[in-house]
Image (cartoon, rainbow, N blue to C red; front, top):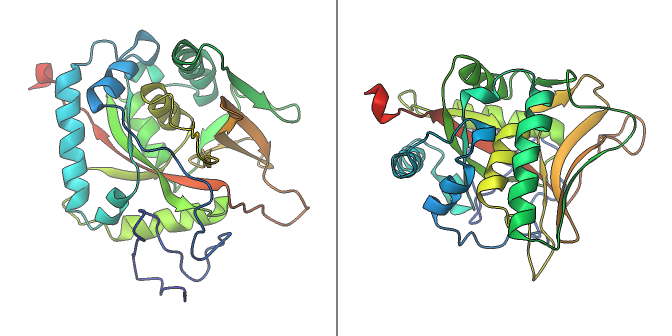
Length: 286
């Protein structure tokens, strides 16, 4: 397979954006060794799982939110990014209480609820946060400019409920730096009248999606991918973040982005995550 021109947006049959010149990937055509299990959880159950005090979404109308998510998927279908829908997608819901310092919100709210949801669903397994080196999350994490994540955090800071879909196979095997380039290509092909934002997944949206679908990274037949949270970065830019399975356990890792000085790491197991989101319009808001 030859790489496409920079103007082309083409997805494979699994919803992966096909790379172009200048984007670093492990395989030009994915071997698909690392796979997610089929998503068999009903949307209403996923949304109900996420409607909790910790995320500030306990007052959200589940049925109305499901309708909104279905409508958002319909918008994506007609937006120029319909190929994303060939791959798996998972919903997320975040309330305005998730505004503020990203590392603190993740530590005190998202990870708390994710641990509770995952371990109550799978009592013999654990959710754990693993930071390599001496890094910490509170007061140390920022949205990466140009990834769309700064738009998500701004909407939360403005007091909005933010609802969307993550597409965890969309940037399969992309290096972290190339995930941003690929996101730019997606944005450039969105129709002007589209009513949503396109970003790279980060701490909050991927975490919320895992609360909604706690078995997302459990696959009995093969190994699941590692989901990069590339919409955010640590103040020490030597590190990257991801959600991953460890056996069948679920863990969040902060780890060095390079194994060899000056050489960016790229892995068959690493997936960039596209996040498409919009402001949830509640019935009470008219």
